[in-house]
Every structure is written in C-alpha cells, then in structure tokens.
Image (cartoon, rainbow, N blue to C red):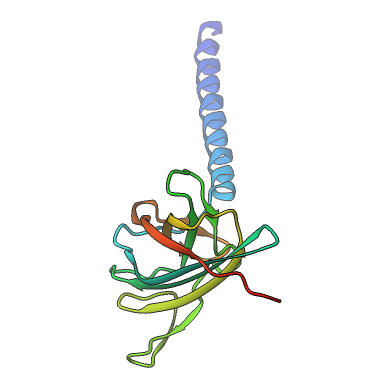
Length: 178
C-alpha cells in the first residue's frame, strides 16, 4: 500500500506544475494586453510630398536674422499626409532648424479646384504655408528638408522614406529704415 502513494504524489506535482504554468501565462497575457499599444499609426511608403514653389528671404536687424519662408507643397502620393516637418539650414549641417514647430499638422484644407474640404493633405491637393522665424541662416544656398507625417497629435508616425532634401536659395533683403 505504501508503494501506491508515491504515484499519487507524482500526479499531484504534475497537476500543480500545470496550474502554475497556466497561472503565469494568464498573468503575462494580462500584462501585455494592458501595456502594449493597441493601434500604432503607420506611415505608408507611398506618401510623396513635392515642393511646388518656395521663396526664402532673410532680414537682418540689430544682428538678428529673421527668415521669411513661403512654401507650396503638393501631395503626389497615394495616401493622405496628415502633417509635415520642415527643416531649414546650412546644407552641410546634419541638424537643421525646425521651421514649423507650431504648425506641423495640416488640419482642414479646402481644395481650390474642386472646392471640397478634407483633413490632411489628400493626394492631388496642394497647400501654401508661410513661416516667419529667427535663425542663424546665411544668405545663399541652404538645405530644406520636407518630412511627411501620418497620424494625430497624440500618435504620430514620421515617414522617413518620404523625406525630401532640396537645396533652396535664400536672399538677403535690403535693411529697412525705421
């Protein structure tokens, strides 16, 4: 009779191991459900913003350079671009000044051709933006980076493959007399 008890204790130990394994897997699953983001914004490879037109003027007053940058962007891709990062600076510099830090998202845009309104820059649409900021930018050839973005202000995906780096010419305006 004593020999038969050993078989029962092995069965109990296997059942306890299975209960512990199932309990740990339930804990890990619940942890992952709570802490892993549910929907991550995605940036499509075929978002393609094109610089249609630009003007860059530099005004210097008391040693401070003010940059006036006007850009017209067009979406030649297949998906809507919700925003854009524009950076301007010396072509040789890796890090450039963010031009539109307060105006990254396109918001509501009315298409001049069809009169329809849409949120974001839809394919085939163009938008004009003007920026005025202070920066240490020299007259002559500079670099403008255009990096599209998709998503919302809470969840943003930058489109690294859609980044466009272009040379732009910034002209120095004659100083204004007060």
